[in-house]
Length: 344
Image (cartoon, rainbow, N blue to C red; front, top):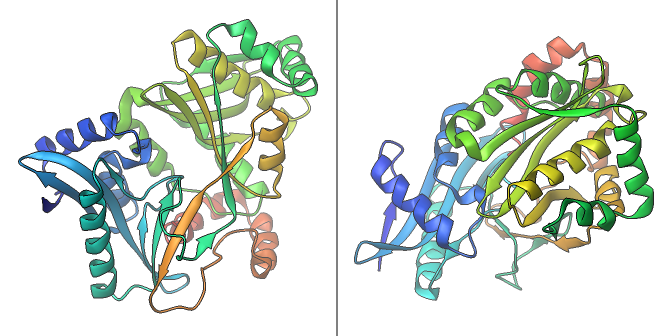
């Protein structure tokens, strides 16, 4: 067993990496090699995409990136800007080799902590962030069966969207999505990812990255979602809407349309993604009949005593959130990328 590192310019090895990710049960969309380019080129973070190999056959991968910031500290993360991460491997030997190297690099880089965004628990003795959960559910083979599986009150909201004459469209670019997304996060008082980030997602992941936008009968965009397709799953990753979307049931209709279209193309799992406990997003997904599943974000602490809480739920950011909401959206969109790149 040998430890290797993926170079950003090594297309042949990247293809082997992705072939392994496609076949490894533990791997997720966020283990794909394309994230190395996105994290490195868009956010300028140093990446460490490690893989374990035996006789030319990959047995495990670990995508890592160092996020170094004066505001939020110095960390080695698998993977920043991702819902899931950590080691995906087919053998325990590969797991141990990759984890040992991750800790070696963490110490050499003198980071405050190593963060593994695991789906399942790996280390009972490592501190765990009990903040995020994910929501997943199988998609029925028949469209009507999926409609009937939505709890009654939420199903009524979907039908309201249909009665309002809403339609969904697949966009060739990110224009309508980004306008709705940037407006939405600004209303919530948080910085937006840069436009070039979403553009890079479309370019790197191509047909596996899709934008669906809901419009009213006058063709006015109301709500939009950027989703990933991986194996037999669809994962809505980032979304946005305008103020009238809730009144018109555009958000409920949007996710129904994403599910309907996924069903028609033979997708088997709807991964609603992660949410923080106690948030509106958490409640919304539960109302769709999805049950929360704990995510095991595990930390190895080196130069700090506790897990960092760099998220909007932290009370110390309340004043900053209120201030951000008052900024003109143009200014917020220009300043946001300088902040969000350090959050990961």
